[in-house]
Image (cartoon, rainbow, N blue to C red; front, side, top):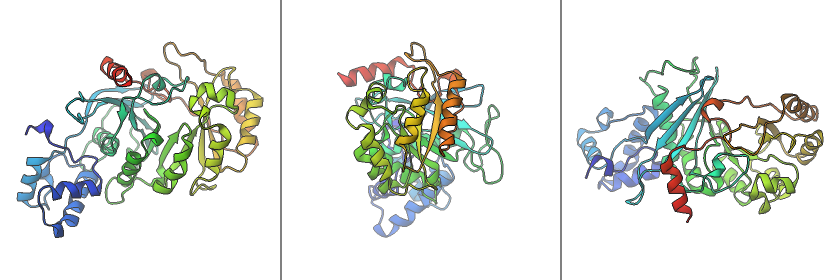
Length: 384
């Protein structure tokens, strides 16, 4: 068995680690303790070698190394924006003999007091939102929980965010007592998370485990284009913060911008938001609204948005449209965005305008799309 054929333990759930240990015929009475040890080394210390696990017996370390690895997905390329945003093209380990190793993108957005990692949940995307570059890719497959968690492990490796590692000297990295380089995770990368709910839920369990990666569930946000039947289940299973990719206040327009709306129209979507478990003024739902010139940015649109959100604990993120080559839309003028924001704000809703980040490396909202020909070819083949 070669190194690349061995399963990696990176990204495994506790149940997954227990199953891996049972496969080594460990006595059942040892399983819980050994899982706790592995968990601490993998997710708290960021161990890359079994020999670093000093409280694990030498014999077990040898058996683990014989059958498993701590191999991470490969960073194929890293781009650093002028504003400090980083975009990684990551090649995943093959999942079977027919898989050549799919590629995804994830983005790190640093600020002075926090760092946000935007992770992908699918290779490609099952939706075809017309304003989104990622939506021009066809779906290849869902990511596993391991592959989702591995994106954070890769980011913490690269950012020096595990004990004993040195942060990179290029770009902005948050500093200060108790400040982690990655403090927030948003499921806003490639894919529709609610079409991969089981794996996303399992990944959230690993990300938020207090004995490992230790992200607060209030700092994990899952964004959906409106898969209504799964919204309540997401809240019940994960307790994650919810974001809705809304972008229009009329069904006829949203049908064009977000074709999923034809299946789950605005009224159904907003009722699911009103019913979302745990939603309150302290745990508001974020509504994302991309500003498209002379498409959805009028004063009347702003007033209708306010009317629609009545009774929903909400904040509205106004997103200046991030162009890409051949994009069919233009970004609203800044004065128009400010006027729109004022109407929403004066109605009592927080309405920050999201500062575009990473535009120069196509890492901004809606721009994620791997540029490799391999991924596009695989996507076309998978869709045939």
